Structures are given as structure tokens and as C-alpha cells.
Length: 107
Image (cartoon, rainbow, N blue to C red):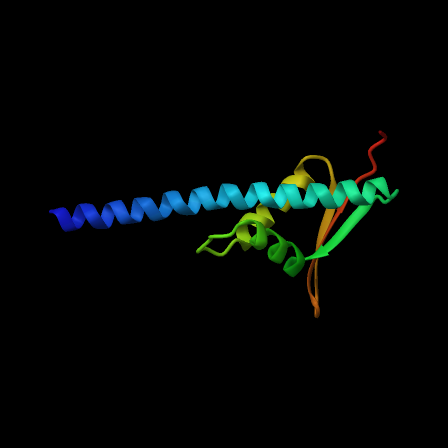
């Protein structure tokens, strides 16, 4: 009986850890993208373009201890920008995947 409880507890702890790390990764993704947007907007730009590897490496540096693949969390977070009124695209090239976030807000 105790072995069953231990396995169930381990699975529950793993799920909770994955959820918590996902929230941390999403927050870090937002922080990174917002800083890139601010920097580009202050320079007069209207969009940012970055590779999947750029965002993943930057977010991974901010999320020190993670044992899960953060790619899905990062992609879902980028999608939230598009749903929030920013224009955007995802482009596959031989060099990799590029994301673009554009804005034309009058400020």
C-alpha cells in the first residue's frame, strides 16, 4: 500500500514541479520579450524578430533549474502576444524557426 502512495505522490510532485517551472518560464519569456519590445520601440522600431534558439537560450539562462523542455511554454507565451493585439508570425527556414512580433499602436 505504501508503495502505491509513494508512486502516486511522486507523480503528483512531478506534475506540480512541471506546472511551477512552466509558470516561471512563462514569466521569464514575457520579461525577455517585453525588454526586447521596449528597446526596439524606444529606437523607433515597429517589430522584433528572433529565432527560436535565441528566445530559448535567453529564457533558459533565467530559469536556472529546470528539468523539462520549455519549448511548448515559450511558444504558448509568444502566442499570447498575438492574442493580445500584437501582429506576429512564425516562419520556418532552413536556418531555423523565426518569430516576429509587430505593433502599430499609437501611443
